[in-house]
Image 1 (cartoon, helix red, strand yellow):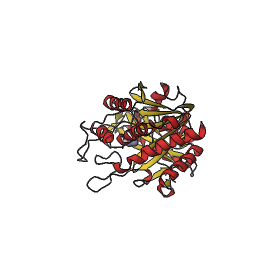
Image 2 (image 1 turned 90 degrees about the horizontal axis):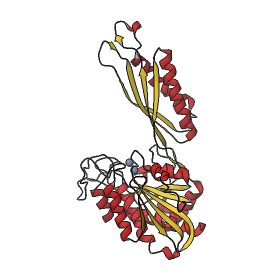
Image 3 (image 1 turned 60 degrees about the vertical axis):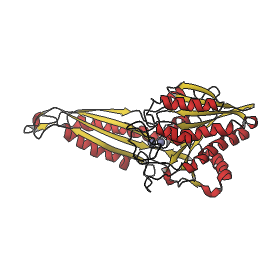
Image 4 (image 1 turned 90 degrees about the vertical axis):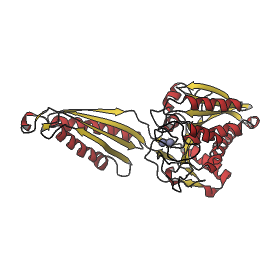
Length: 381
Ligand SMILES: [Zn+2]
Ligand SMILES: [Zn+2]
């Protein structure tokens, strides 16, 4: 709880997390854990080596905050204006430090190694990919990975663990469609190409992708969040810009939807005398849990906390998390720890200025991660 409150006091954004990284390193070093700093940017990696050789388990925590001005009124509220740990990553970081605290005294019973991955920039632009590119999953090579999210995601109540096989969170892509027409006087439309007219048709036609092309049993979302064009009452707009997001759980659905957005935008623009370009901004892939690792994890936490404390999540979240990149490389599972804090008696959602977590259950996250690593190495080394 002290670690969490310290981190909450000094939240940092994206890749720029120097104070957070320095704090993590110093706690790990005080606990006698070998530390590697500056992994894929300001990522920090702790390595706990067991007394006999074996496989390697990775445990991942994201460590970044959100650009939200804090309004909780707690004594340990953010000291950094406009930045707040409003997603609970301060709790993730503290819980993973807790794992180091627990396991460092059990190394004589552990075959293999445990890698503690402290990852920046989950809220964007993404810190998992640079850490993987910098070799975080090598030396020693990681065989399995676990991670968690706290708060109120998946509607898990405080003190309960949520597990799910298969798709857990969506793949997400942002896109920009730029439509080019020909400006002119609105009274003489025949001498113009009206980009607003084209954009309207494109927005309507994009609705047909999910309703007409995607298998109705397969979740997918395409939402337009912004449409900007034009300057006056009587001027035909030369350019229009559409911004949107798409979400999906299967890579082939994402790819097909990207193709269709491109074809619809350029086909409609061309048929109406203009042209369109589409840009897809890098997003996170779908987060897919490994079935057998998830079953193993469920068994571990049921033994630890009791069967009634573990909930099988039915519906995945359409939110996204770059834990997905680690799970693409190695099998593993991402789970939920219900940790619903209140401000003035109300439980606020993630990213809200009054969001808070329930500190009374932080020990459960440390215990679940430590037990998963310990039991997995004993069973598989
Ligand atoms: Zn978040
Ligand atoms: Zn988060």
